[in-house]
Length: 65
Image (cartoon, rainbow, N blue to C red; front, side):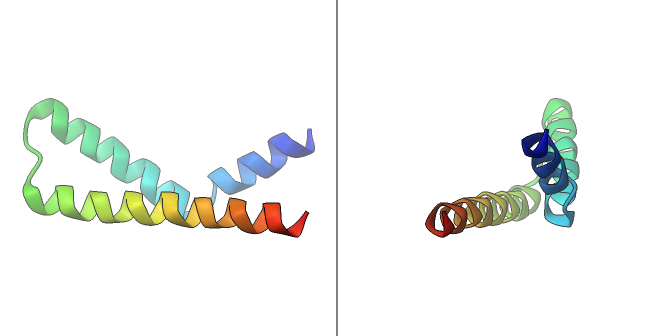
């Protein structure tokens, strides 16, 4: 149960919420065929930051064990 609470608390961080909303907007625009280059660039930067910081957190946790 502790694992579930930890995962849920991570999902509700600000960066996760922003990433999820941005992904929904990207999906909506992609389905309508109206994704502009500027939006794609911003989306790529934010997704890269999210997964990069998530990977870094996992590495820190593994080193701390």
